[in-house]
Length: 124
Image (tube, rainbow, N blue to C red; front, side, top):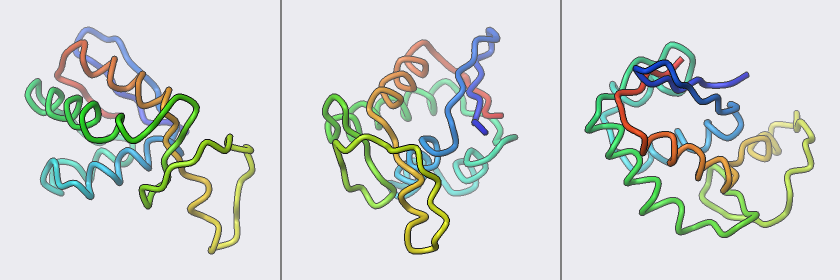
């Protein structure tokens, strides 16, 4: 399962939902966009972001999120950071569900690079 970011020139990037969920949550928490604009981007068929919105998202990720992560680290929904590698386990107990979602630094860097190549971007 993944979210697909697609540029108007047809180039795309797939981000698995475990990474995207954290990125989406942290952007929503920062209120970078209105809920009406950003909330649909959580799932397939999320719509578009225009050139200025894509630039704003790339700036936010670069300036506010990337500095929190060093090489080999990942960030959870609550903003905590760890250098413990993801063990690939699927946690099913309600108290542990949060452990399924983390945004890896290298994924964040790849998303930023994709966004920096220009918008608009459609979310599938």
